[in-house]
Image 1 (cartoon, rainbow, N blue to C red):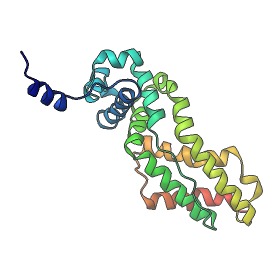
Image 2: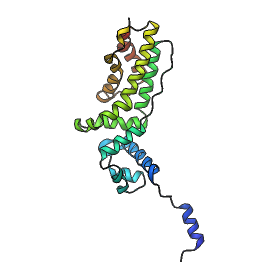
Image 3: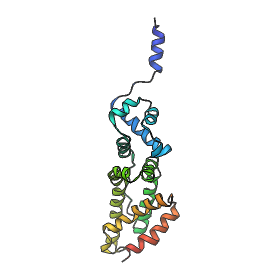
Image 4: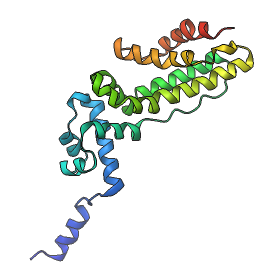
Amino acid sequence: MVTSSWATAHAQTAPSRRRGAVLERAILDAALEQLSTVGWNGLTMEGVASAAQTGKAAVYRRWPSKEDLVADALRAGLPQLAAAPDLGSVREELLELCRRARDAMYSPPGAALRAVIHECDAAQAERFHGVIFKGLVEPVIGLLRDAIERGIERGEVRPDAANGYVFDAVPAMMMYRSKVCGSEWPDADIEEMTDQLMMPLLRP
């Protein structure tokens, strides 16, 4: 027979069983952590379950495939980009925005995103296109648009520069250099891109 004192001590030390949103958050966090450490190719549903301290069945009940789990983990984990303040100069605003985008890319959730971008084949990458665009590319483009439109109002930027090709330039360059060249975008590279690519595109 179990003594009441032992039962009380066991109840105090045994981990509580997580359910619902708490368990789902733990699984999503574990998926992001696994992506950022072992990468897309090394991530397994079993490994995520172990890291989340739950059973494999609990993961599969919610996400029938690795792709489904990773897509939801990225949606939940990607950091929000705060709007750059009006610094009175389009160059300074672009520098600040690019630094924030860089910091997001190299945060733990950003490392998970880069693992997907770098390691997935074309068919797999297509599965995450919407997540990547809405979670990172679209916010960056929106903030670029704000900075460029302020520059137009100040007379620093030619009016026809507010177009999709110009807005695409920064995220396209940052993703390309990150994936193909392995760049981690130190401040010096951000300044070089701003001065040699963006400012010539924007000048009246």
